Length: 231
Ligand SMILES: [Fe+2]
Image 1 (cartoon, protein in one colour):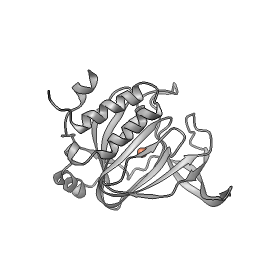
Image 2 (tube, protein in one colour):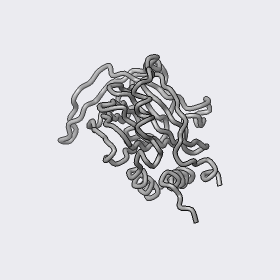
Image 3 (cartoon, rainbow, N blue to C red):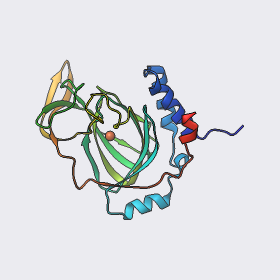
């Protein structure tokens, strides 16, 4: 019998988790598999990192797999760039850094968010503590209501992370075509206190998708998943 690769085992668990209604136990198992994934597991080597370091686009995307339930991809950020704050409407996501160091700033919306965000809308969100992630860090989870917005800064790059999203951005749930990814900027920020907790509350406004933040694409060369996952 041929042993399944780590990325195959991970993808299979992701489909199990998000193919049914995501239950906590299944999500925990996915998180634990995701936390163990390394750059070697997806064949992300020095050549790829060097290539991205030299290209002009601030980011490079390598699509690994997509079906109606999940998207799996690798994102590589050049040194010093910031992936601007964006949302993942109605989605779950897992992010695992496999190379370099990033700073992750996550926000949870206070405004009810089960709808498509309008461009003139002002949104209130709570900022979570910013965290620094490297290849030894566990995977981070976002849900439709918790940490659904984030901004990712590359502190030591190129930095790469593996991303699993469910459902994919392309899957329509609002009856308005693919769920849109919206970009935001902070317009106001204040410190709040609630039952001995001090936290930062921010006002966000929608911005156009930043033109200077385009990406290149590279072909994924790690263990293939397509045939395996569609069985
Ligand atoms: Fe994201």
